[in-house]
Each structure stands twice: as structure tokens, then as C-alpha cells.
Image (cartoon, rainbow, N blue to C red):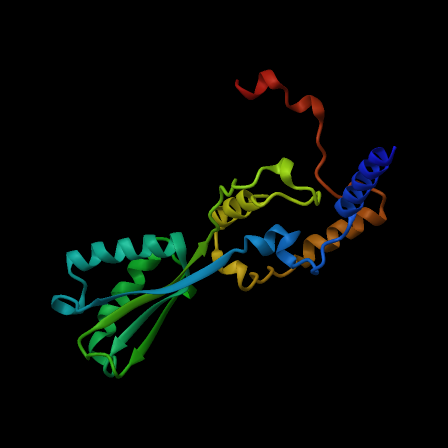
Length: 220
């Protein structure tokens, strides 16, 4: 009888210990995967210096290099694309305009290309640069603890890591992690039209008829 009571007491004590709260206060990364696997951003300046050819225009090699720079800028650059003239800038105005027009012809907006002067740069040089942001994603695959050993009913160690990893890879502009992009201005004319339709009791959005699209018609 005493043995049974002792065993029952030990089992009850074990159950109570299993239901007790941890002694230390939980940290943010104990239950928030975004704190456990944060996303960060690394920034670097991509810069290339041109000297120009005859007549103040780019050489063929420099023109090819500029096309590569513009393509790289469109993939991972942060506006603006800066064109800095050395010395007083007077000797390289033709070269700078050639660079700017070529960049615009390759798909950049005129507002994205900024031209300036740096007296500390050699007078016969023109430097093209932009800031590139790269998202630093967490490494996943921590399976050193099995889920069935977690008695606290907490998330596994690897929980949420793949979501953060994939989010960092899908970012079109990693700088959004440090500062959100500005919203476009509201279209006042469209807003007025929607309000008038709402007041008149009419449909404010586009109408969609289920019979307009069928599975068989998609591949035709």
C-alpha cells in the first residue's frame, strides 16, 4: 500500500512539474519566428570610372561596360544612378551627356540619372555609381531536436525559418526592409467617379460574369 502511495505521489509530482512555467521570462525569439530568424540588409556602392575616347564620347568598351552597369542597376540598384564629373566638370560635359542619354535609352528614367561634380576626382575621369542593397536571409535546417521532445507545447526550433528565407529571396527591393517605399498619390478623378457611383447605388468596381471564362475556353 505504501509503495502504491509513493508511486502515485511521484507521478503527481512529475505531472505538476510538467505543467509548471519556466523560471526565466520568455524571450521574443522564443515564440516569434521573425525575431529568431530576422532579415537584414547589406549595402554596397558599385562604382566604375570612365575616361572617354576621342571627342569626349565613350569608347566601345566603355559603352559595353555602361550597358552592363545599367542592367545591374535595374536588377539590384537603388535610385539614383550617379554620374560624377572630375575637376571642374567642364572637360567632361559631352561624355556625361553621352552616358546619361545611353542610360535613358536602356530604360532608365531621366530622373534616375543624376549628374554632379567632384573636384577631388581627376579632371579627365567620370565616375558612375549606385547603391546596391542585398537581403541577408537566415540559414535553415536546424533539426537537432525532435518535435516530440518539446514538452512546453512551443514552436520547433526551425519554425518560420523557411518563410523568412523565401521572403528575403523574393524581395524586389531589399531596402524596403529598412524603410518602406512611398505611396503613389491618390487618383482624385477615379475617387470622384467611385463616390458618384456609390451614391447612385451602382456598382463601383468592374463587373465579372462567370460565364465569360470557362476552363475549356482558356486554352483556345
